[in-house]
Image 1: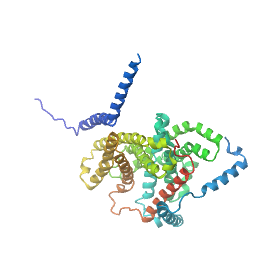
Image 2: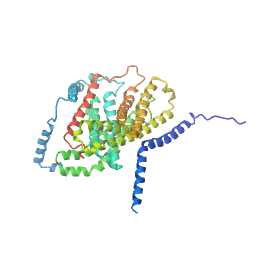
Image 3: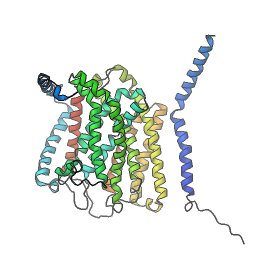
Image 4: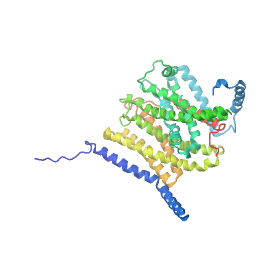
Length: 57
Length: 398
């Protein structure tokens, strides 16, 4: 006869894994948030630089 | 260059120059002088009684509480907040991010003075201060003691910071050849300094590993050394933001135009670094909390106090730094820097004093003499800092 057992995340370190995952995801989001506007500016500048360089040909 | 080779007339010239430089400049009746001079004088009187009558005459220390406010604030907190020097040295000399070069000298000077005054304040707290030399001269080395590592590291790192700052002193004294020689040693000294710093910042935390039964479980962890090291990074960065803001206002006439203009850009970079480090620190705390299964401790008065520290002075300033960087809100960044500095002070006081012997009914509170002497140490450091920056080329003139 089979018994079903529920996984207790407190006992199985599941919570620690969830915390680790949230750390990684939130860490990426934080770095993206911190460098957000500058990245757009840099992309715009790069775009204009590349356009200018083609004008030379 | 050998100092013995310096001709006598050069030493005479320097002595005359030094005496000339000792003369005060500017107005005497400033608000800072009016407040600080009486505090320093009272502090000196208290120190006289401390060294003639002993620690018991002026402090509330006891056998239960061997660490008082002098250790908790001056040594533990002062050293953590001086962490900006090694972090910036790493950023400028190792990562080669040149935009922070203009604030490097003043940060190193702040670090040097912090180590001289705050770790020097250890002498006040030792029952027999003349024994401080023991770990250095080999009398009872105590290789197994963390304090042995900390003692040697404090000494070596203070020397390293002095060497890093010494080209500025040589420049001020018009010793050009010596300045060139000292400048050539900078990179090596910086690498030694960074290594020493990383070790003793965590070493200070490691001293509490032996006090497991005495520290409240919410603050005790086997990872205290790691937490002390990481918090010294953002604490140091926050202190650089705070000091930089104060210096740019008070000593604005000594700072060059270019540095003035780049000040905001530098603050944004430092705030970004602080936000990321605080984020990592916060998750370290969460992991430690979860690993230690400390859930039952949260719904107590100690738990609420712990949340005040962790959320109010770590998570909130972390978000404030991030918001300030993203929206270029310098007021928010500066407030976050002050909160972060307060948070590091609170953390060190919690581990060292407040949550130390937490179960004891007869708690330790610092006496007014301990508070006055601590204030005196801070004021004397500011006096020395002001004397140096108004005479030597510490701020970038560009």
